Image 1 (cartoon, one colour):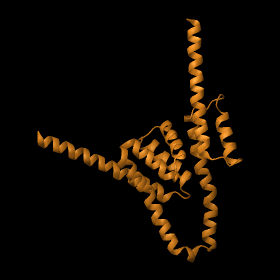
Image 2 (cartoon, one colour):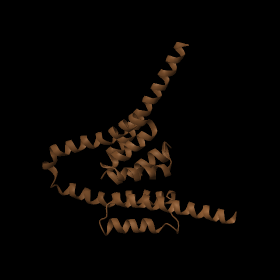
Image 3 (cartoon, one colour):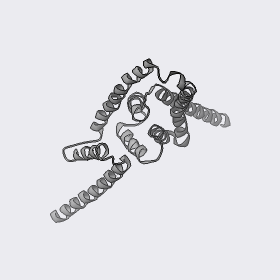
Image 4 (cartoon, rainbow, N blue to C red):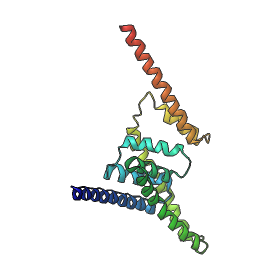
Length: 204
């Protein structure tokens, strides 16, 4: 009996550690090959976590992105922490965040050591001129995908439109946009429920 319990415990620990190692490797790869970081990581995270591993749904991913926007810190690290915590609590958040941070730290450290030697090379400048427009496309593509999961209709299409206007043209903080949108959704939900309740009472 004791031997069976020990074997079961070892199996669970091994399976859990394999998950930690896998999640660390996935986010390390994402952090290593994403130029621009932050929002440029979204399509890679989406492809790995939603489409390939199927660890979270697209709707949950959108909610986690909203949370990552509202808390202080780097967006890429925040989203890794929220995904990790949802899947495996503290250690899931730890390994996913570590995987996101470590490659960037090593690369930035290496660049800092040799930056003065190659910063003015025309080849380096031309490479980044080509990369920047591609990063815009990487961010735009998953945005259109997530718009379908966000259940945007003719009744609420004004919300992303006004939000984009506030952020791009008026330099409004995304944090305030998310808070106001959440508050508006809460008030609208209460109003809708109250209206339905009143209609039900009148019919009765």
